[in-house]
Picture (cartoon, one colour):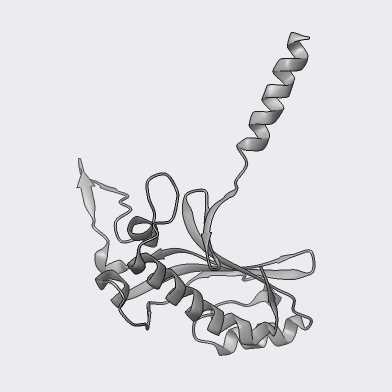
Length: 175
């Protein structure tokens, strides 16, 4: 009986420890304490989608026909009203396109504002610092998204900007 109970607890903890979406705003999800913009698309013509990706400056480094499905973006500037100081500067991000079960999932993550990144050195070694990341400005320590007007404005402006890039390529999108 004890063995069955222990086995039950181990299986329960294993299922709980998997990555899960913890919070969301628009198409931004908190996955493993990181803000990730994700959207699903049904796309019929892979070659046409590849052509559209190459014709857009934001996605031009992708080549899904040759299996180049992820890239670091160039520096871009977010355009919007009443944005906080950090969001008025250029940002860089990691962009990936995954093909899963007949649909494409577009993910934009690791959004960084290079003008606000601090380089910290300790004993001659460079240390990683979260300052300058979208998470640092818009997430609480418990992994939840801050619900301030500035945060909501930034996330909805990013959501709108990314949707304007990818929605015309696919027609309809799915969450």
